[in-house]
Length: 543
Image (cartoon, rainbow, N blue to C red):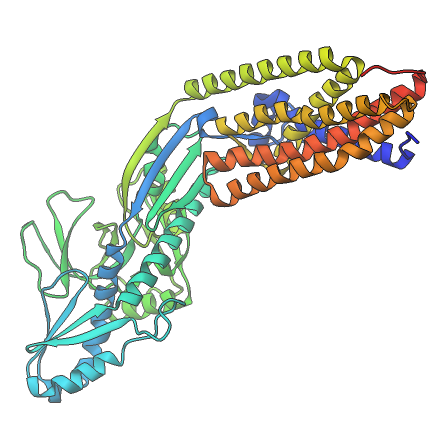
């Protein structure tokens, strides 16, 4: 018989009310957004009732405006860093064999190659064996069984390079690390729902809604923030000065025309930082305080203890920002970076250092700024599309199925509310393709009702009573409804897994729309029909 248990009725209405309640904040978007921002800042706010949900559907780049960047990770930089860091280890290893191999000299070479000349070629085989002993297994599945270094001999020189397996593993590790650091830097700034995705082997797509410009986004992530502490060899005003092997010449940030000659191998690097905060020096000027991990603190303390009276350069991204003279042993692994900073610059530098250094530089292949006006136009176009789709479907259903069509229209309105409620709960980002998914869902949402209503028409022709016809209509249309929506849901799932950006936005709204459509068609519309039938008790019905 045509009936629904009381507990099922209560559960259906509770689901509907919960969905509409979570969708409500989106009708007061600006007000709730200001409320959320105020609360996030730790300040009280009464502009939105605290007992109501405040989850919003996040607006994507094409609806809100913002910045878009496509960056390529310069993985070659990491090879050069590895070779620079390897030289002190090779030098110390060969020094223990000096009576056998003679002098040891670092030779000029490509950035990703380490060339070492020894004075006694007769000891070459022993030197090569010692350097090869420094190699380590490649830490990747594809490089299993391979070593990270390749050591060869050219005349009286030992040539050290990274193996192909290690290069592949390094590339993968570098891109993954860059992706995570970019995400941390953007999260530090507090932007809402950024899109940060890997594209291809060495590219990263970054989209941040609500940000003023692409240049502002580049200022946040474009700096590698490579912080090193290096011994100072000398100073010069000659920009063309040729440093010796194992040394480098870098410009001073605060003193135009001044250059520092430094040991290329750093004593401590920014990778060993555990914290960095904006602060002020003893003169009240903006600065950045920092703290090392135990390993960095030990190296920092040992070096300062052994080099009192010598200058020590603090280098950020290839520029000497400060070169103080070590006055005493600095224990504890903490210190302060001073320079001609503004408060904003010291804050940004602290964010960059705290989030971690990018392992390699970035080349920005594409950058776009989408203004909020364009986003507002997209929202308006989406509203018009939804209204037109709504009006067309509502009129069609009312004219085609009469009272039953009106029940379907009520369920359709509830359906759209449930879609926005679910999007708010999961914190999804709505894009223009996402709006297209909602519009498509509006058209598809009545398909299930059409199947049911047509089935009821067929049952009425067999001279069954109206109650039995309605009951059989829902029962026998169920399998067709489920099959049709499962196949569409599988497509939405595939689009979500394999797609990216706009495609995923479309798949999310389509998938959620399918779930809510099936729920409203099978349960909400049926409940409305049952409630009407129980009150009216009609002898005949027309669908």
